[in-house]
Image 1 (cartoon, one colour):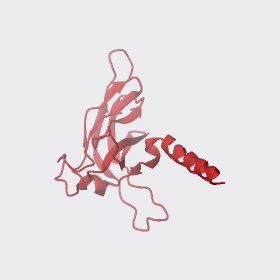
Image 2 (image 1 turned 90 degrees about the horizontal axis):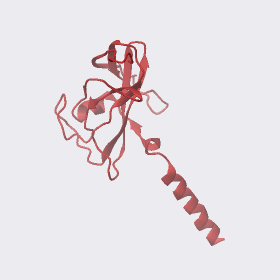
Image 3 (image 1 turned 180 degrees about the vertical axis):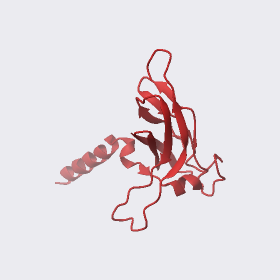
Image 4 (image 1 turned 60 degrees about the vertical axis):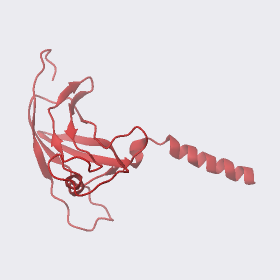
Length: 156
């Protein structure tokens, strides 16, 4: 009976170890982004996966990007910058998790996919309301505007 218990515990530990890192990522609101130094958009780049939007942000609060940091989080890593495109509007949101070896507090680029040439307004996505969040809904914050241009080979 005791052996069965150890096997059961081992199976649970293995199941958690096999979970992707982003399973535990937590979306952050814009107040958090401001508290760690702000966020800045860089020029979009084209890759085999489509357009990417590099952003400058350090979730540990070790760099001033647009505002002086008021919070230091040495145990946080930036897991991803989620993005969704709705017409000419791009919504982004930073997701953080507990720092592990090899991870960085600097965020990777947001993956935008294939976009038509033109100007896009980029907003920071307010956290979705849930049963634990009884406060007022957060307004969206515009971060800036980017331009997508056609490439020489006709792809965009």
